[in-house]
Length: 149
Image 1 (tube, rainbow, N blue to C red):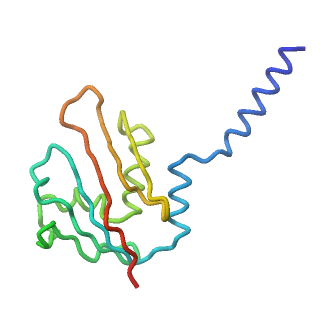
Image 2 (image 1 turned 60 degrees about the vertical axis):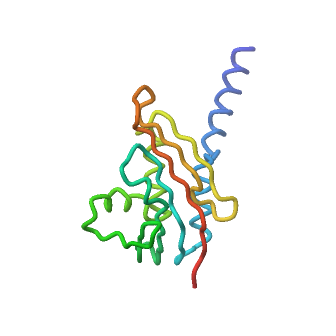
């Protein structure tokens, strides 16, 4: 009888846990519900990369499209810049969520994230793709977020 009760309880708990949303899901939904279509933010990309002295990037987004992306000194980053495609992966909040979702799903060995309490966007992320490898870590910091008319 005890076994039947324990098995039943385990099945009920498993069924209920399927409805629990992850922190990632809750914050992505918060971002989507905010319906922010025009915004600006700074993005610091930290890694073992040659461009770190040019950080942070200043990015303006409207309706899911990057309107402008500049280095900290105001220099525009054209599509011909060797780093453009790498930066573009993090050029909108939706893209940040998409990249982070892949990392959390197993593309990286370790992922630590914090989210903006108001809008739910990714505020900081530390990604270690291969725990035992050196110099593959990536950190992302969003600051100066502002909505625009």
